[in-house]
Length: 502
Image 1 (tube, rainbow, N blue to C red):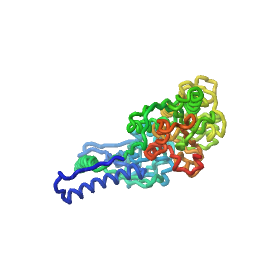
Image 2 (image 1 turned 90 degrees about the vertical axis):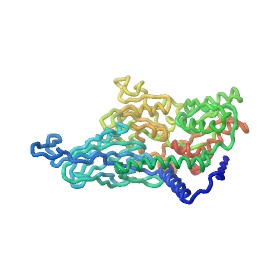
Image 3 (image 1 turned 90 degrees about the horizontal axis):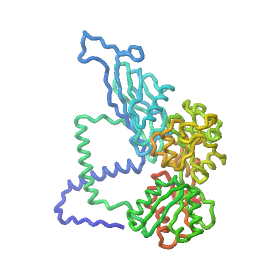
Image 4 (image 1 turned 135 degrees about the vertical axis):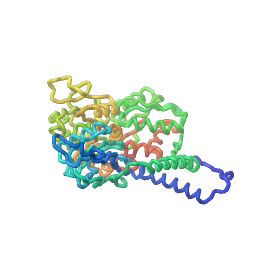
């Protein structure tokens, strides 16, 4: 444990006002950090960037101004530009909008509406399609369609209104999250507000200096360090998480040389088993990560690390947020080939799958979602166009989870399966609810969500005492590793009933 000693002997007398100011600043930052990162609130923030009548100023009897929208004259016209951001610490899913989130324009009537400057663009296109196809406008009220709005997403509504009212109000709320969530109005800063922002920035600088003096390093190092070489193979689904844990371990344990070569769960455990049978010493430098139990010899020793929450993912262009298991089986059996058949857009369904039986995520998807059914044959090499014009279904295969997510993110009408944490990094992807249950850790714990698997770390026989292999295995289930696992959407086994990881 690191201990920091601060000598105040040279600072002279510290007056009470200074102590109070410093305490207040630190307390403010702590409250903000807790609210932003620990309470994990859902926050939908809107800002009225423009709210002004349309006309000629100063008024003149020599000029008549007429505003038309789609050929009709708009009486007493005005324009509103409304920006909406997901400014919270969590993604907002369609089911989180328990009460309709809406924006009202008192004493004015909505004449026209466009979605502009959306990030990502796919979100704006989807919102515009929903607003055009369904009744989300009620005279003077705009109802926000229930759709997935990920962390950092934003968009603007540009409205033309008629009437002599002014101002914008909101209603509705967001459910879920450890501290709930809400919709908040953020006034547009002007004049003194900018000075407030500058003062806030200066305050943060001062707080940073205070933190440098008073805060002990909270990133706990590993309890034990070992030197040597280690190669981690296997699951591509958890590869990003293992890379992050490797970096954290190697930062403190500088004599540890750890490399990662993810090649699929079955490929990894097979390599470990074959290496151990030929060269036991070489096998002591290998760990194989596997989505689910290995099917090789009894010489492989598996340690459960966490539960991986998988998700069925689609490109947002589909306009679909939920499917039943029966509908998914129809898709992967080729009985349903267009999203229009499922209530979405008139787009072909493009299945993006993992290559072959060595993929743990593919095996889990087959067992947990398709009820043991096999996937159809390949009809596309690039996932965009069918190479076989006669084939009714559209399906391709890729080598890694990252590549699958990238294809689903980029291709209209695409569908695939991957671990939930990785899917959140792609802005044009929606993680589907299956049978009405959204993919999240809490739904795994209460047994309502079925698409998950235990992640095992395998070695060939028992690791040697004080070896790097043993030390890194211990680190995977340690307290410092837990927040990394949780942030990437994994549920540490110690946090679940023993029946899950037994």
